Amino acid sequence: MTSLVHNEMLKLLRKKRLYVIILIIAFLVPLFTYAQFKQIQTAAEKLGTDDWRTRLQQEIVDTQNRLSSSRIQDEWRKFLKVRLTQQQYYLDNDINPQAPGAPTFMRVFAENSIDLLLPLLVMVVAADLVSSEASGGTIKLLLTRPVQRWRILLSKYLALLLSVSFIVLMVGILSYLISGIVFGYGGWNLPLLTGFSVQGDELVTNSVHMVPQWQYILMEFGLVWFVCVAVGTLTFMLSVLLRSTAAVMGIMLASLIAGAILVNMVSSWESAKYFFMVNLQLTNYVSGMALPIEGMSLGFSMAVLAVWTIAALVISFVVFTKRDVY
Amino acid sequence: MTMIPALQVKDLRKTIKRKEIIKGISFSLYPGEVFGFLGPNGAGKTTTIRMIVGLIKPTSGTITIGGKSVTSQFTEAMKHLGCIVENPELYPYLTGWENLEHFARMDKSIPKTRLNEVIELVGMDRRIHDKVSTYSLGMRQRLGIAQALLGKPKVLILDEPTNGLDPAGIREMREFIRRLAREEGLSVLVSSHLLSEIQLLCDRVAIISKGSVIRTDTVDKLLAEQERVIWRVSPVDRAMQLLSEETSVKEGLDGTLITLYDSEQVPVWNKKLIEAGISVSEMKTQLPSLEDLFLELTGGETID
Image 1 (cartoon, rainbow over the protein chains, first blue to last red):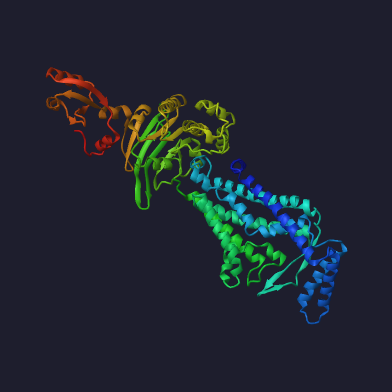
Image 2: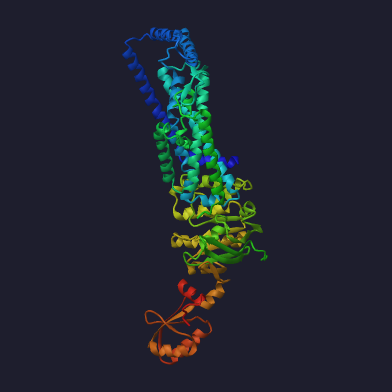
C-alpha cells in the first residue's frame, strides 16, 4: 500500500498542483496582512488616540457598570464576568487586543477561509485525482495490474488525505511566518473566549470560558482540517463518477458558492441545514459568531459533514470497484 | 509445444442495456503463438479484449490466464498478463523511466533490475529519461510494450499495435512481436482490422463479426482458400468463357477477371488462354478485402 500511495503522491507532485496551492497561499497571506495592518491604522486614527490602555480601562469601567445594574439576567452577568476577566488580563499583562500578533492573524485567516478559500484549494487537488486517469486513458493500465481496484482507490484517497493535511499545515505555517514580519510573532497565550452554545434561537453564554490562544488555534485548525477532508471527499466522489475534471470543478464550485449564499437563509428555510455546504463554518461555533438557528450546533454540523463524507466514500468505492471501464 | 492454453476464453457473453454485444466467444491461445483477432471496427474486438484484461465484467462465460480466472482470481491472473488496450496512454508529465517505475511499484514481484531489461528489450535506452509528452507515437508504443513486459507475463495483449505507426515503425513492431513469441515463448493476442497486418504477423486468426467468432483457423489455411488471381486479358469476353469452363469467374471493376487462386490450376488455365490466342498482359494474386472475406464467411454475396 505504501508504494501505491507513493505513486499517487508522485503524480500529484509532478502535476504541480501542490506548488500552485502554496503559491496561492503565499500570495494571499501578504495581501491580507497588509489589509489587516491598514485596518488597525484606520481604527487608531478614528479613536484619535494611540493609547490603547486608556481605552481598555474605559471598556472595563463600562463592563463593571453593566454588571452592577440589577436588571440584567444571570447568564448574561456570567458572560460579562468572563469578559471582564479577559479585559483585565489584557491590561495586567500589557497586551494590546487591537494589535494582534502572528497567531491572531493565523486564527482569523483560518476562520475566514474555512468556508470558501480552503475548500477551493482542496478541490484543486481532489478534482482530477480519478477523473484525469479516466480522461487520460491511464486508468486502463492502472486497473490491469495485479492490484485489486479498491486498493488503487484507497491509495488515491490516502494521497488526498495527505495533501489536505499538507495544505492545512501550509496555511498555518505561511500565515504565521509571513504575518509575523508585520505583527510580531508573540501572542500564543492571549486568552480568548469560547464555549458559546445555542438554545432555541438564543445564544447561550453560561458555559463561556477562557482558553489560551494556542489551544484555541489547535481547536480551530482541527475543525478546518475536518471541513477540508469533507469537501475533499465529496470532490473525490465526483471525480470517480465523472470523466471530466471541468465538470467536477463546476459542480463543486457551484455548491460551495450556493452554500455561502444559503448560510444567510437557513434561519427562514430550516431544512437547508442538512446540506453539507451550509455547515462549513465550524469555527463560528467556537467563537460564538454562529447564527442562532434551531438545532444547529457544532455537533450537528460535524455530524452532517460526517454523514455526507461517509456516503461519498461508500459511493466512490462501490462505483469504482463495480464499474465497466470503456 | 505444450498444449496447455496460456489464455482460454469460453462462451464469453456481454449484454449492455438488454442488447447482447458479445454473443458467446470462445478461443484459446497457446504458448509461443501469435493469435490474430480480426474484425471490422465495432465487431466487438475491443469489448472482448477489455473483458479479458478485467476492465469490463462479462455477463457470462469464463476467462482464464495461466489457469487463473480473471473474475475470481483477479490479481493472480493479472500477474501473467501484459497489455495495451487501444492507445498506449502513459503519464505525459512523467519521464519514461518514472512511468516504468510507477507500474513496477504496483507489483512487488518485479525486481528493480527488470526495468533495465525491458528498456533494452524495446531499445529505448537513449530517451528513457525524457518526458513522455516529448515522445513520438512509435516511442510511446514501445514504452507501452516495455510497461506490459515488466511483470514477465505469459500472455501479451496488444490492441491495434500498429495503429498510427509509419511503415518502418509497423515493420519494426511486427518483427519485435514475432521475436517475443519465438524467443520468450510469449503468447501474443493482436487485434486488427487489417487483413494484411494479420497475415504478416499471426499464426492463427479468429475472425469476429457482430459479436461472434465466425471462423478460427491458421492464417495459411484461410489465405489459401481466399486468395484470388486477377487476370488482365483481351479479349475479355472470350477469356471469360474459357475460364468459366474451369472455375468460377467474376468480372473486376476495370475490365479484369477474378478467379480463386489454386497453385496447381492457375498455370493450366493460363496455358489454355494462350493457346486460344488470348493475350494475357497481367496475372497477380491478391488478398480479398476484409469486406469480401466477411461477405463470404457469413454466407452473403460471394464471387462464386
